[in-house]
Image (cartoon, rainbow, N blue to C red):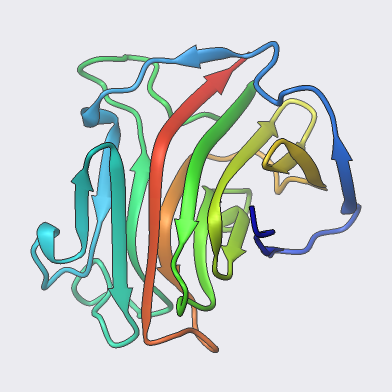
Length: 206
C-alpha cells in the first residue's frame, strides 16, 4: 500500500508527534450502534443531496467545488462542505452521540482521490471558545484507516493512521462535541474539485 500523507492541523501547545505501532486503538472500547438516522449530511444549500453525496455498496462519496455555496443561506463563507455529521438522534438514543465528557472514538476507512488538495476530511466539532478541536487533511492516498480518540476527561486527543499512533495533543476544553467526516474546503490553496469517500464508519466509547 502506498503511504498516505496525513496533515495534522489546528496545532496546539503540548503536541507530541509520534510514529508508534501499538495495540489496536479500539481495544477496551465498546461500539455504539449507529443507524442512518445518526448521519446528517451537509451540502451547499442550493444543491440537491444527490448532487454532492452518494451512498452505494457501503461507500459514502462526498464532493464539492471551490465555487459552491455554503450549506446555509446568508452564512459567512469561510468554507464549504459535503460532510457527514455523526449526531445524536433523540428518537432512538435519548443520550445522543454528541458528548461533553467521557472517552469517545471515531473510526472510518477513507479515500481521497488524486487531484483533491487542501480539503479537511475529519473533524472533532466544538471546543471551548472554538468551532473545532481537531481538523485533519489528507492529500491523495490509497484507502486508509483513521481512528480518533478523544478523552474529554483527561483533555487529550490521539490520532491513529492505519493502526499507527501519529499524534497526541491537548484538546480545547469542554463543549457540545461531535465527530464529522467528509470533505470541507477551507481556502486558500484548495483544488477546484474536492472529494473523499468513506466506509465502515463506527463510533466507540468507554
